[in-house]
Image 1 (cartoon, rainbow, N blue to C red):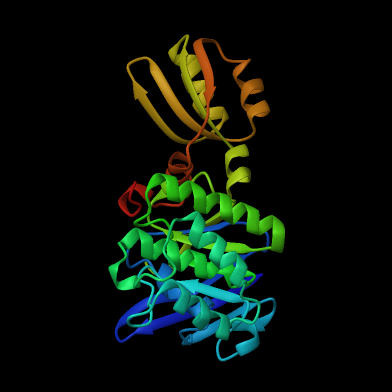
Image 2: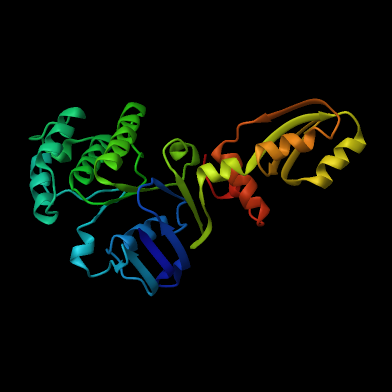
Length: 301
């Protein structure tokens, strides 16, 4: 587990992180969300031991990360703009990373290079942005670490490559207990891959929840009430977080289980009633508005 407790980091007058507390459990894909400048990259660099915190602690498996070589060998960080050695080839980079990470799997790296159709002897300088991103992911997946920290992981990848990477993550999690941490500013990009979501805003943690629990605890209802009295009864008797009315049609996001919501509506007269699936975006809008924020202002679709 990666655990940050009251973690702070400033760059001059800019407070990148302000006493955040966050847990990333093993065996899940953790999505770190927030706009540019929210503190995602700073957090990942602190978690990887690249930067030293000003205050607080960040540990992996109970051990401080910074200036700890043994712990760092369990963490591979992929920045948005990965650095490759000058004039190097993929084969050169594999040998270089193998010298740093003792469990680097050379066979796996060569198989993945073939899988992504990357020439191991071609100069990386001639690669496209997407090819460089694929190579950085190959290095990370082959490193043998328990934690893979990815900053804007899917930026520059085409849809086919994105699906391939997601499949590889799933396989590595089963094979060797890999825990990927994926930062992004795009909700829809990681909705179908992450188990847990953390939302950073202005250097703080606004929200950190398991996606399935979030979905089970919120219901999206569309209905047409039989009368104004029934509408008042519904809104007064349930925890309605977000609502919208278009003519006679009401759309509500309600906190509670599906069973409780259905039972409650049996006591209310409606012309039309249905429970719809919620998207991650709708969940975030509901949860953040409930605590006084509008997620639409700082999350890009």
